[in-house]
Length: 482
Image 1 (cartoon, rainbow, N blue to C red):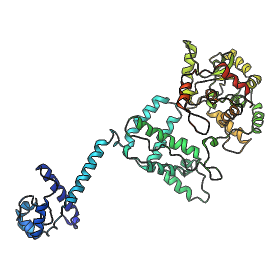
Image 2: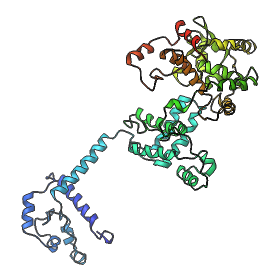
Image 3: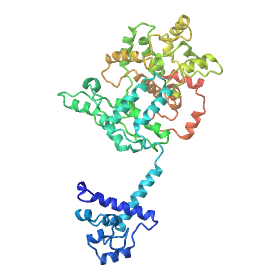
Image 4: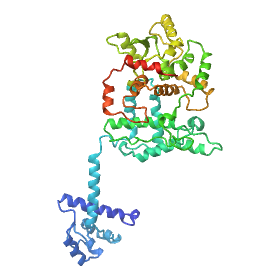
């Protein structure tokens, strides 16, 4: 006890825990004998009695039920004890003991149930996570470079805590802050601190617009969700606290929540001829000329289009197709091409029949000229070069964005909108969902119809079917009007 503990609260806590320790060591009941307490209550002693060691001796319970284990040592220094103010008698009731035991048991249970690694700081586990992603994606993967920055934003907002202590509330706070980050905030405000970026932006006479909800979900929430899914896979945590959390700002102008399919819209009928007019002014051997002819009729992603090779254009089941599957059947050429294709997902490996209108536009003639000139392994569009992340469509995507801006001001119209056009054409022609998914390279458990899931029977049927469309399935492409 000292001058900084005038209320004697710390002394009281020490006395209580010393009492518990002594009882445990001496194998005595933790709860005092109520008979002794009642007897002590009927014969109260003064504080002087406590210091003189009178009563039941070492470890006795005072009139209030407190331990006086320190009495003998204090009596040995009587002059010092007389100079010091008499401490208040500290009550240890059965309720006090029960509460302390309960807290101790609760803490012990939590320690016993804690998953290995759950007490590790998030920052201590990030390097191993990045190494794993580097191994999965490759050193040049574009998304790999996003992780360190996004994790830094996360810890700046929520803090660097033991992994097991992140809560759903933490994730909601992270989402709410990211929802308010301004566009190009780091360049504008020259700080990495998201909270400071938001503060500085709010002080502007005309605040900068916030990043769009799609960016919030894909560029900020998704990397952190992947990080915590990694911890779930390692059994460090039981569930991902970010599951089900998305930007709150995914709203239409009327304030009604929009479906994920509305984040990117198909081009309107009058957009297509306008885009073709722009494309017609480009060289006939360029991706800028062919993109608007190929993508809406095949459902290819822009990156898939940019890496096409003459080897990918071949006849399957008697029909010309774009082959992104390359089942080798022992053929080393197709085995090597399959390895080269770095596609978005395993389901992206697929075979797409070529629409008659695309053949009518001279696409096969263009492919054959490239094959004769540069060989079957050549890149169909050598103008598409890989950027530092290994992305072949980056420069093309920027050029097409400028072309699209000349036709529509709706930011939901992008090059990727052509996949929505293809899906809409499939629906209009009555193409079965399973066939459409084969053409588009959707995951097996996805159903484009309002987010509904397939039954287990349907999943099994498609899982064990051939990934190559049959001749009958390929014939559906002829019914599409684009």
